[in-house]
Image 1 (cartoon, one colour):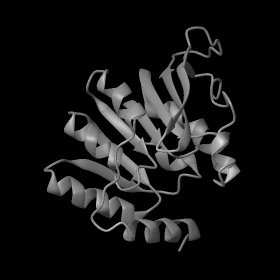
Image 2 (cartoon, rainbow, N blue to C red):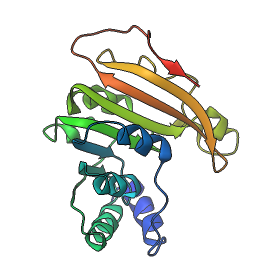
Image 3 (tube, rainbow, N blue to C red):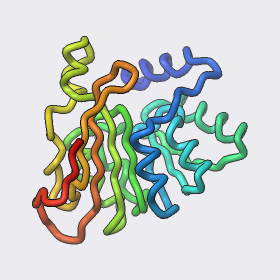
Image 4 (cartoon, rainbow, N blue to C red):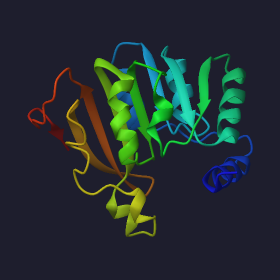
Amino acid sequence: MNPDRSRWNDKFSARGDVLLEHEPFIVERLAQRPRGTVLDVACGDGRNALVLAELGFEVTAVDLSDVGLARLQCFAEDRALTVTTHAMDLQHGEGLDGLGPFDHVIISHFKPSGSLWTHLPTCLHVGGTLVLSTFNHRQAALGFPRQFCLADRELVTIHPLLHCTEHTRFVRHGRHLDGYVFVRVEHTDRSSAGISRT
């Protein structure tokens, strides 16, 4: 078994019946937008996917951990919700091909690889949104692995088809996080005009 999958399977197995709180940055941004289809990348056991499904979004969730996805389905059944799930290695973006396009993509507490970034824009309709919230380099100073942390403004110009409309840094429950909102554009445009910062 993939050692990363085994590690995450053990982690999710240890949580029992507990589902962690959703990520407010992500849910609040999507709650302001028209209901539609959502791809939750690195969804874990569904803390964000389930809230969005409750809000009326049609959610597809992907993750490396089959245990996490099984937990998600159990939580969904308990809430009479439908979430489509797929197990895949997210270090290789090819697994996303054919799943979309979606109206929205969300990514929480996960730093996509370069390979994944080459495929993420094609998962979105033109005009669709990608909302991401994950650890920044200040978290590394607290012992979190540096390779999983974002440098300041690292993703602002990550892909020419993703126009960054918001970038913010914040602390939540002692965790140092960066939040980004992107809109999928039709043509290449690396202009940063219109980015809001807090």
